[in-house]
Length: 402
Image (tube, rainbow, N blue to C red; front, side, top):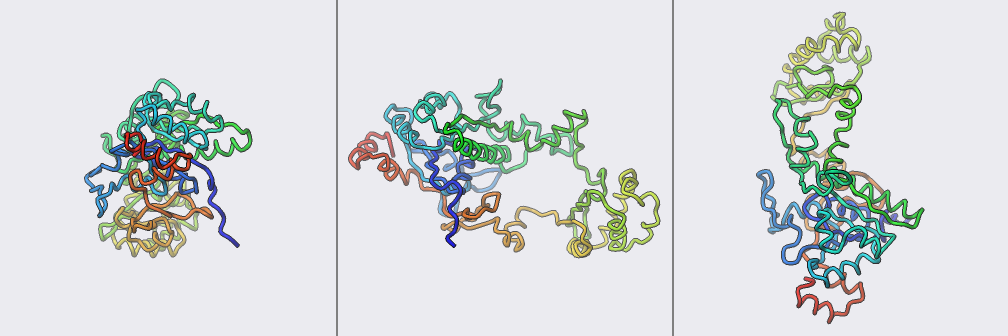
């Protein structure tokens, strides 16, 4: 049997995006088989191409390419058009006329300057799915407010949500961009499905704030409905001793994931800890008692965990069938044979290692190609619009296209 075609085979996407949020959405569409044409700024391209460091890490590949760009733009074609000029805007309009999706995370005022506002492009192509990634907002008072991952994460409350010392913390990795970009790709697929039923395109949007509030929906929901926020994580004062992390004899940490222990689970833990006396302690006989006396039990478990190395505990607890895991570092993951066996990390043709799409789906390879060279596909894409080689050369000579 032939391999199935990717789900978005035949879907054409015009990707006018920069940095991470918008490019990631386009990359996910490319992963699903869409033909994604990235429109870049003449001379410079996406700003991510030139980023040299991020959170202290070198963001250049061994061949001098921009690593941030490579990580969120694979599988696309690249063209460069000067959208400040009417002739460049006309080229964009030609691209949009037979496209399925227009994707951007530029500010609304910038898109208007490029003659690429929603009403303009939807007029040219009523079947178009016009997808807008926003900063702090998309529909209300915050719409059009410029933002990036730092400010989006700050405004969303996330910096305090993850704090354990009362001070805001900013985790590396552009989480707000990644979450909102993934959400935007999801919305695009939904809009394409609806278009199949209605025949009409639509304007869709999301924002960094919307994505980060989605990520914190349990926290926000608890506060909005009960008036009480989730408590910051504190291993020494865990509300449930068996939803906690513990330090082991070798200085490594182990996580326990036992939400509601049965009597048999509790006895099994007492046996593997070689503490049969705990079975007779009436404070811990029932799950409710173990929660009510969490402070004392956390201290007992912590003392026991310090008696053995982490791997010894992992072997013991795993053999009992109780859920546990090592607390890993990022540098552990890229070498872990068990992680590698999952196919989550994959190599593109260049040999670069990527985290593949966050799902497993027939017809969707983990990473089938690299990010494009700057303006590498300008001639091919413009020729597909019916422009002659002479006309393309003229546009390049006049620096309308690169």
